[in-house]
Length: 204
Image 1 (tube, one colour):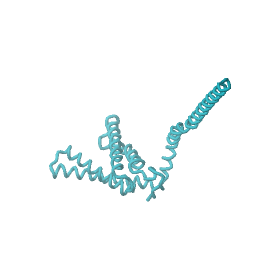
Image 2 (spheres, one colour; image 1 turned 90 degrees about the vertical axis):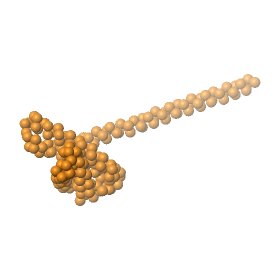
Image 3 (cartoon, helix red, strand yellow; image 1 turned 135 degrees about the vertical axis):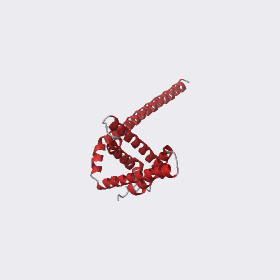
Image 4 (spheres, helix red, strand yellow; image 1 turned 90 degrees about the horizontal axis):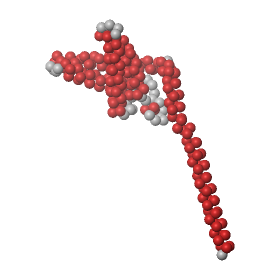
């Protein structure tokens, strides 16, 4: 009887020791997993900071690429065509169709925007491979922000610098156009390669 009790106690002691060892092993594994995971979590802000620091270098390299200047020239030509379309549609709405000028101006802005989107997509940035609905939404966002920048700069030149509206529009455009161009190049119409690991699109 005593031998049986001793055997049972030995089994229970061994089981308890085994359970304690398993718990200790699991705790060590959990600590090791946590330690290995911490650098991965810290990698995200580190990469973001590195990209932010490298941004001026990327912009400087971009200024030295002839195809970027060619795109800017095309973008400016498209903008000029959009301005002509805007005036033409507004003149038609007001003087031919008899539409109230506020409504005519809104219609002219929409038609000119569509003109600019199509030409920039197919000619300036050659981004026909992208999703057209996504490009259109981003193009609209960039255009509205650029319009806000232009209006703010125009107001500052008129109210603070004392320039006339027409004279102030030129420096205002000089401020808003680079943002408009970069926003569309790097976001609205960026190459599909930036969405995936595919090869970069060929520049023309």
